[in-house]
Image (cartoon, rainbow, N blue to C red; front, side, top):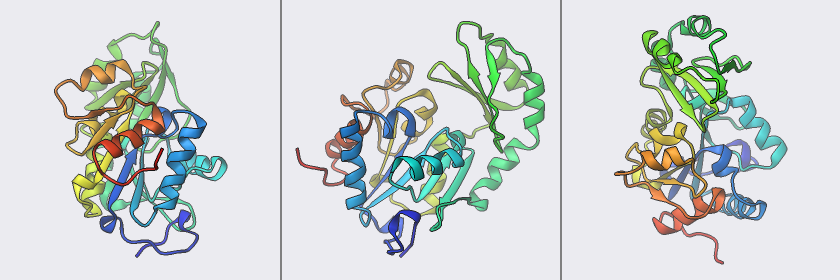
Length: 262
């Protein structure tokens, strides 16, 4: 039994013992859809926390995630794969995100000390504006698609790192081989959760690696067209409903858990 920030001090079964685990992106996915649709999903999760595990898999940093939970009434996740897969952490009973060192050792080793090197290489690069957040194992930029010079991709590759463009407005530089997909699989294995009980949910290209990771997955109805195109040939569920409603649609269609009636 475990105690988490959202439990009010009441122990819950270990994640591996629960019937279903939702591993979801935030923007456009868990935070997508109408207010009523979000409240339906969130309320259903809270009413079933003994049988549902919740993991946020997002490009957002841990401080943003906890701020959203505290201020906006989101269900608290038990674990977080944040920073586009470069953070793997547990949410403690006091509401803090604590990195799991054993799961981040490889990520840290792949990144090394590339942060300053990447920033220098892409300084004043056309169409890229450095994001101010001091990420640990990535460098991220806001992207102006009209001004962007694709030569940035080659520069990043020459530095032994990976680049990722999502929603045609973000450019992330990541450790080689690190993204949401490998990191959520690493966490699922660490927690000994049966793969068939997990649903990965997303809506943009930075979700691609987890939606094709071999775990059950859904691209919600408002997904980025480039993501939908890249899913051809994969068994990812394509929801018609947007955001939160698309998540519930997939859970019902894949028979992962009983869902709200009506």
